[in-house]
Amino acid sequence: MEGDNAEAARLCVANNLNVKLLVDDNNVTIAGHPNEYMPGYDLTRTLSGHGMKVETVMGEDFEALYTDLARAFRTDGAYALVIKRPMAPGIEGAEGHPHAHEVLKAEVAIKYLEKRGGYQSAIDMLKNAKPSKSPLTFKGSSGVGKNRDDFGKIINEILEKMSPEERLAKVRVFDNDLEGSCGLHHIRKKFPEIFVRAGIMERGNYAAASGFGFEKGRQGIYATFSAFLEMCISEITMARLNQANVLAHFSHSGVDDMADNTCHFGINSLFADGGLDTEHGPDNTRLYFPADQHQFAACVKTVFNDPGLRFIFSTRAPVPDILDESGQPFFKDKPFTPGKDDLIKDSNGGGYVVAFGETLYRAWDAVLNLNESGIKVGLVNKPTLNVLDDQMMKRLAKAPFVLVAEGFNVKTGLGSRFGSALLKYGFCGKYNHIGTHLEGCGGLWEQMPYQGLGSDGIQNAVKSLAK
Image 1 (cartoon, rainbow, N blue to C red):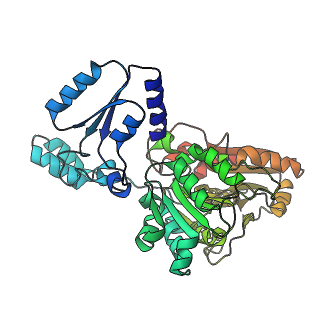
Image 2: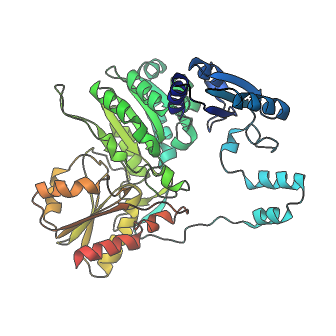
Image 3: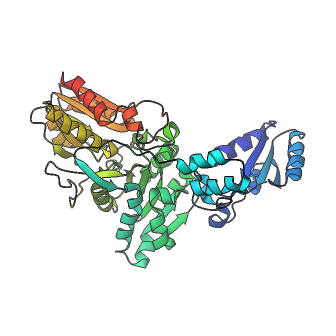
């Protein structure tokens, strides 16, 4: 929000608006302390530069705070008060620490409440609370792969093969304060010389990554949450027009295991695909959403040195390995071919479900159950979201029905485009696409079934088409 706030501050000053800005400046982000990793960062000087009257005060000094608040509200025009205070003041083990940005650990909360006294019922509740785990099981998959964390480990494997001089010349990694959530912390720890801790500035950092990747043979690496992709569309467009090389990892895609719910779904990710063919050649923007840890690793390694803009999506939730019908990992040791779809199961004359990412293993369970019930249906994995696989499209065009199941927005996701593409291949069957379409209402593993994207929801959608 800092860019928006800066523009708002300038507008307030220019129009002499009687707006009071109170900033709780705790010097904490998820990744650390801005005054340490962003030397020169100073909110008081920033706001002064916009022309605002600014006071700085210690937040725990109540008399000084009251005096400065009174002055601010008795002064006409735009006025800012930067209030310096630690995050979670008075809570041992959390005060002034980035961990206070998240939910407090139970032991920290219990210790704090015990010290204060009079909160025994709350203490008992915390001690007796047990985490809720999903009771769901799925046919056709097993194990756990944490793709969002693996991203940094896989990049490290690639970087280890370069000399120090080559790494420094060819690669630069830009973090948006989410290194531990997107796997970038692995890169920072191993190769700090190519790591840029740039703080919370998604648009500026994407522009910086594309600026570094402007030269042929260089790669800007960028990562943040999928919810923030839409902020960067203008920068993405300019990077594409300048033929920049950016490998971007957008984690926390879809809706699976998302405690933040609606505000964090990041469900319009295909907005990143808006390029045009130019005099320099066809648009080579690529959007990838691999199925499991094996395909994810193969994808990252394959596309790392590709020119242009590459977007790799992962989920907050771990994903299991996809198994073939003999029970072996389908994607293990399998090369990744950009633009190539995977036939997980032939329909043998029936319809098909097309899925990707965290929806694939749920769709695989649905397809196996449907076949056991006598409904012929196959499964296709589409890891390259914005490129049509000619051979697969010809196969699907002959099917009696096609269903696209995805964790993206049902209005703007893959399914909103895929039906039109099928028509161009002569498809005459029935078509439907299901995706995220409801506000979040709490829950973690419960969110996919709530959106109709669990195995049962996919089965019901197939049955409607197969009537």
